[in-house]
Structures are given as C-alpha cells and as structure tokens.
Image (tube, rainbow over all chains, first blue to last red; front, side, top):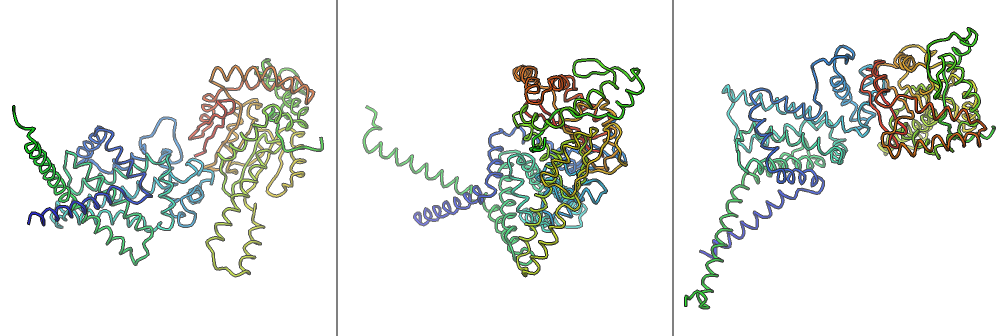
Length: 313
Length: 310
C-alpha cells in the first residue's frame, strides 16, 4: 500500500510537472510577452503591482473604464488654452476618431498606415493625416486592443450588476473565466485574417511596453470581476496563469478552422480546468516534497547511527 | 551646364523676386531692417540679393550641394521622404523646390508603393487566367501615377529652368508641374494640397511668418507641413567642427567649383542667422499648425519640422 501510495505520488508529481511546465513554457511565439511579464512580476518586488492592485480595488466603485483608456491614449477632454481644433475637440479625440474610422479598412489593407489614410479620408481629412501616427500601424492596433478591453470591462460590469440585482446566478470561477476570455476573443473575429500581423507588430520591442500594459490591465480586470481578493503571492500566480491561458487560446484561434471556432473554446475549457486543478497539484507537490525530504533526513540519521557517528564519547 | 547630374545644391532658395524688383523701382525706402547673412539690409534689398545669389548659382547648384555636404544631403532628403511616407493619391506642393530633388524622390516613392500594392493584390488572387493577369498589368501601368501629383513652385526662373531640364534628362514627365511663385504669396487656392514641403528654402524667405501662413492656407484639413532646413547644433564639440568646416572650407569650395565666394559666404552666414529648432517650432504653431514636432539629423546640423493642419 505504501509502495502504491508512493507510486501514485510520483505519478502525480510527474503529471504536475508536465502541467506546470506547459503553463510556464507556452508556445514559442508568445514566449517574449509572457516571459517579460513573469520577469516583471518577479523582479519588481511587488511594488508597482501592489500600487496597481490598490488602484484596482479603490477605483472600482468609481469607473473601471478610466483604467483602460489612460493605458494607451490618455484622452484629454478638458480644452487646453490655445489648442482649438475643429469643433473644439482635442487632438487626441480627433486621433481616436481617425483610428476608429480606419478600423473598417483593416480587412482590406491590413494594420498599416494605408488603412489609417483611408480612415482619414472618410472623415474628410487629407490622407497626409496618417502621418500623425507611427508608420508601422501599431497605433491602430493598440487603439483597437484598448477599445476591446473597454468593451470587455463594460460587459463584465453589466453582468456583475445583474448578479447584484439578483437577475442571474453568480457563475463559478472557471465558468466565469471561460466566458470572459471567450467574449474578449470573439471581438477579434472580424479581423482574424490580419490578426497574426497585428500580434507580430505588438511584439516589436518598441511596442512591447504598451501592449504588455494593455494585456495586464485586461487580465487584472477579469480577475477583479471574478472576485479575486487575494493579497498574497496568489495574486501573481493567478494573473500569470490567466495570461498564459489567454495567450495560448489566442494562438490556437489563429489557426482554427472549425465552425464558429469550436475547437478553440474546447481548448480554452481544458486549460481553465487544468488551471483549477493546478492549485491542488501544487499542494500535492509540496506535501510530497516535504515527505521526501523527511524521508531523506530520517535515512541520514539512521546511517549516522549505524556508523556510530552519533555516539557521544 | 548640359550634363546636369541629379545632384543637389542645398544652397539658397530665394523668394520674393517680384517684390524685390518692385522694391528696386520704388527706390531705397523699402521696408524694415532685416539680415542678409551677417549684414543688415532692408527687406527689399534682401529679396533682391537673394534672387541674384540663386540666379548665379543655379547651374552649379547640384554639384555644389554634393561637394559641400559630401553627398550627405541625399540621405537627408531620403529620410525626409520616408518621414513623409506619402500614400498614392497624394497631392504635394514643393515650395522653393527649384531643381526638383524632393519632387523626383516623391515620384519614385509613390511609384514603389503602388507597385508593392499591385504585387500584394496579385498575390491574393491566385487563380487568375492569363487573360485577367495581363489585363490587370495593363490597367495598372496606366494608373501608375494617375492620382499622385507634385507641383514644384519656385520664385527663381533660373532654378526652375534647371529643374525642368533635369526632369527631362531623367525621364520624369507625368504628375509633375512647374510653377513660378513666391512662398509669401502662393498662386494657389485654399485647401488644395495634401502635403506642403519646403526643403532648404525657408531660410531664404524674408518673411517666414507669411510663408507659414500661406502654407496653412493652401493645405487641406488634415494636411501636413514639412520643412527640412539647417538648424542649430547643440553639442559644443560638433558645433566647433561644424563652424570650422562652414567658414573655412565651404566658401573656398564655392570659389573653386562655382567661382562665387560671396554666395557661399552668404550661405553659411544665413544658416547661423536662422532661428533654432524650438523657435521655428513656435513659429509654426503660431501659424495654426498642430502636433508640431522636429527631428534632428546629424546632431542638429539639419532638422525636419512637421506640423498638421487640423
């Protein structure tokens, strides 16, 4: 029985390692993003993240939307002296309008300055207005991503309100995570042909800070609405895990050709289930580790006794 | 004089010739004091002098550009064009563009972009018949520069003459027009152009504020103002070397190659008298442009200013 127990523990340990390894080493393409996230979360000694988490909890009653927008575009709605543009809107607002108009040309032109130029044309501006943005199209992508994140937080907030009003049942955590990630990924579907191009542009070193901050704030949001109130290291593990799930599901979606992306949602379901089991596995690994260490200590003491080293002379 | 290679003189551009002639007729009581190099002259005198300078250097302009900057001006102009990043269908006004450097680069750039677009379109259409493929090639050749146009405007007839000759030699014919005009008083309607450029020319405009206002006027909403010009070097070591080179070498080159010491003395002096980057940025903002920014090339020897009419 003991041997069977040991064997089972070893099997779980091996499987746990496999799961953990899979989680920690997602496929090559997003290695940079998640690795930098992990390094950032480990190295920065919780300081900035503690600040962000404080902000999250403090500002939640106020307006989670404010979290999303300032990440990338910092719109200034107050008029600034000497800066009137047409119709008293600020430069940032005009840039938003141009980028929003440019989104409809993305399926044809891709995430490029040409799409932005076409968008500017529909607003009645000259095509030269596309020169306001960086020529690799990253501004357009970041704008789209932050728009999607804002939509996602609105959805989650509405759902939370419905739960509070008693109209719907509160979902269990894994269901909640699955639905949130699915809703967010579905927003990409209209642009899915050109989305791989967008992902590669977001991974350029120049764009990594902004894309990373958008990603982390979205994951933060999801966990917040999922009811995460942890204040210990769990905060990091949860976010790292969900980031891994999100990134890998996104990649699977890129090359999924099943009707309505069924394979992707099934993949997502499995990953979330794995994540839920991971905490049990982690505990098992720890207790097995402890048991093994104690066994070794015992063996060492026994050997010392046998060789007579323990004898006090 | 006939073999005009596509080299450039980033020399002086002059504007205000018509006013200068009028000033001459009126006599010496002509306008407030301004500078011509390190001298102090009236505005009318300045315009006239600058016109004469360019009249005399026009034929050797490109050669002098290459020798003075050791060919680096071509790189500057290429960077300038990349910053503009024009899409096909852009209408460009190149002011003080006498010998046509920026205009030719613009045409090349837009043609290359069009070709790339065509190639991408063809790549997507994998199963065409030979008939359809040949048709698509035929229609796109005729459209190669259809909607992109560049208007080169200069105040100096000699410079325009040199430019037209160069265009003929290099084979640029469509999408290019040459207009005689004064940057302070452009002969165009409002809201016409997508991009307004002035490369190494604004230094020679007597009233820079008027030129900027004209630029604002002729640009479409959303249009872009781009200015390439010599500017202020802040690094002290580089500044000393640059001064040494400017005042000791360039006028000598001018005498040896073009037989004109005075014009090149004027050139280097006018660079020193031109407002530095921040001041020019403020002037552009005053004219009504938004998102005004500048980029230093070679440590500030040359700067590209950009603004949008929003």
